[in-house]
Image (tube, rainbow, N blue to C red; front, side, top):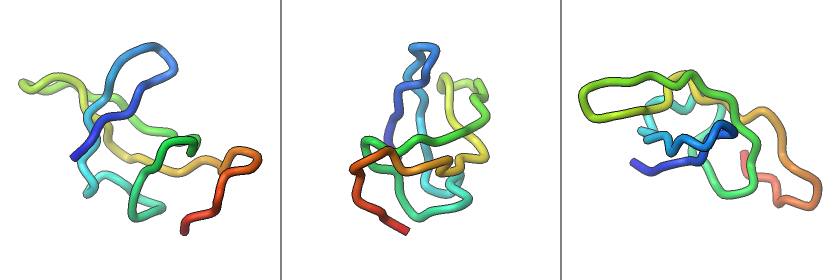
Length: 60
């Protein structure tokens, strides 16, 4: 369990089971996700690694 900062400024809770195209999320990766609200606040669903930024080490 962890958190990512969305482009809209929201802090989104991430459960590793929601990651579809990778095994983890690290700072610097560009990801897409569906923000969903539940009784515990906002969380990410259908999380995908969209691209590796220039100069970032590749993790796959």
